[in-house]
Length: 70
Image (tube, rainbow, N blue to C red; front, side, top):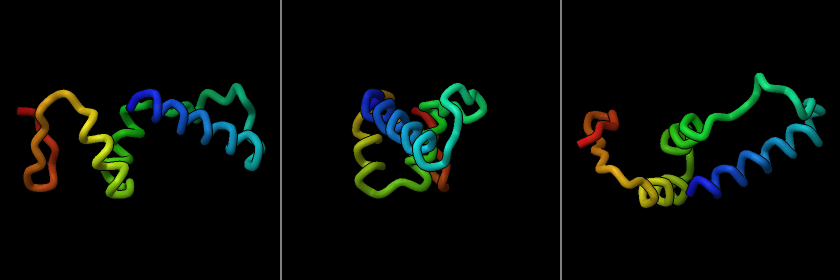
């Protein structure tokens, strides 16, 4: 899953540089993989969420709209 997220981030950066005209060395927009995973769990499609959940190794519990570890 990490590789898939890294590929997605690289694709986004390529889009950002090509379409939006951003500089390659712009460190202010560096994307953290953990933040991206949280984004997927919050705003991703059901397929993306299921794929991410299936790759997690620790037992996580969703209770009262909050994710906790067992």
